[in-house]
Length: 67
Image (cartoon, rainbow, N blue to C red):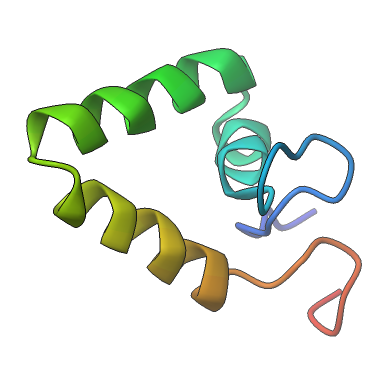
């Protein structure tokens, strides 16, 4: 079965981006959330926030049109 990078529909805090990345790479979602938080803080907020929201816009939701 082919793995696809999708936003999580059941493990989401905001848009499901971190949950989807964690499912894709089979890691704990908390680690992904901490990584995104660290990236956001250490890059001066804007680049990390832009990355997160771009991923939220570009990643399809799991079970959506991209089954």
